[in-house]
Length: 421
Ligand code: ASP
Ligand code: MG
Image (tube, rainbow, N blue to C red):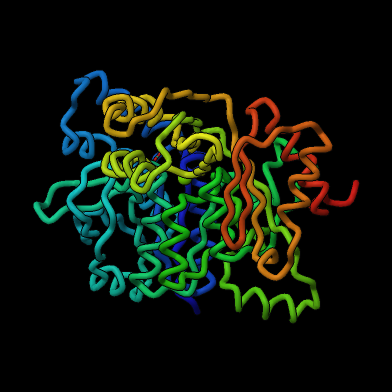
């Protein structure tokens, strides 16, 4: 017997037929004798619809009331799932965020979970009752409803799993796992059986939208075993295909067990949500770069790739960097306002860019990963506009129109293509 948290996303909860399928899966797991808590998303599209109402109500809506409105989508699905389970003869009840409670920091629309009271929850689970918990929502110290930011129900599920010390957190979604790259771009992308937390963190943050990035960070920190599974497969199947997210050590152990070799590259991700900013002719002196990035940081704008090319002739340099597209206008505004303080010539922006990243813990012990990437792109005439690296990732910024081509040739170059069918 294990203690399992099951999480179902929006497409899995979209309509009564889907919810009945989810209930059948939950019943199957309960019937095997496991203790179960379920975390659910709102029906697909529902949160967008509710956000639309808020914007219509007032351009400057009150964030506290926004949370009251958008949290309702998950209240509906948790109630419906509990009802459906009961109709199938499975004991179940819903526990809303404020009832447990799931305590969050004081930050409407972007709250972080601080703690979850588990007394009643664990007692119910031990008594054989399925606890159905709406994801995305919590309660602040002033007892008002809060929400965790879009995609937050993954984080709710991992937080519940950590709090009840679950053996596993199974995240059911509309794909059957994490792939080497987006299968819509590369038909021969392969599903990964195993991926490490760190790789998943890099893949999630560079555009592989299977899990909310924050949920992966939390799982890594809390050591929660996470499994991504499809909710569209037969609900009464034992070994559903999926991807297991493990630690580096667990990966090594599993590879030994199966006598498999560690891949150099695990996956290739792309992200079209960034914009490039070039600040030209910044004085080449201490403090200049800080005068650009400090005000952006103060405005909570996430700067990603940075390059600075200093000109040997002049005492000036161009600074190039990327920000989320949604923050581009605000970034330019802030910098233009500080033109005299920073002392630059002008600002050039470009939204026709995409970031392509190769990710893999295998590159730690293998030189040449970046060189292969640059050479492969050069052979196709793809120009690199910026580069950034971490221990397990190399990212390049390229023309947006060349994204698909870049992903495809890199997938082949690193030997990730599945054998032809
Ligand atoms: N329903 C919320 C959203 O669409 C939370 C979630 O589904 O993860 O962002
Ligand atoms: Mg989601």
